[in-house]
Image 1 (cartoon, rainbow, N blue to C red):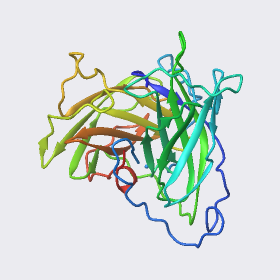
Image 2: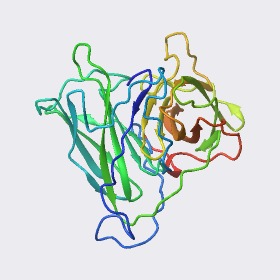
Image 3: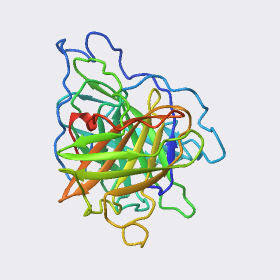
Image 4: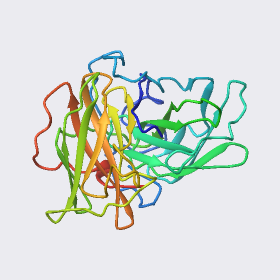
Length: 319
């Protein structure tokens, strides 16, 4: 994945009609966001319409990408457009070139050829997955989505070609079952997950690069021995409320480069494509397990105050 910011924007309709239930053949009732299964290579997190900024709020804003299912001569072919909420399923997809051929050569970035993000459109459920590729170019990964509704799948990769650029392609995924809408969690500068507290300082700014710092602590003490995960001490994904504009950044400095030490502070540089509410998901590793802390912030407004921690992705975590 890019060490710089990757942004994608899109406005796609849900894959099925919402009513008393999402999908068919299911009883009506509330859906509880159960904790996702713990797994070393998986992660898990709605939202009002953002203020439109066109995705190019300033010269510092990277070009928008991932708005389409096809871009730069490549297409995300999602072979599993629907799953059942609460049931483990095999998510399968292929990246195809302009001639329709399955792509089988990718550049490895942060220990992986391709990174896959799955997020619910209400931004309550979030997964960062690392699928495996078969020789014919078909990618697959198990996924267990706890709640019915519409989801977006993001494939982040770089083809193994000279001067190839990183791409993020997006496709819609539906999880059938009883559906209940949830509100975007309130803004907060702190989040808790599995006994850890993560504090956020800095503000996300539209059209302008800004620094975000996150500090991990436990039992009131700073955690100074964070472990590298996929070649970094932390991974940050930001999704804009409403259309799920996508940003993926890595810390300022990587393990072993002399600029970042393993400690409680993880620094990122990010640029929001527009003003509006965003959901931030931080993946960090400590004592052999990866956890996800989640925050709601607003670009173009005041930084959220430290207060009651709002929680973590999907009322649980998963990697």
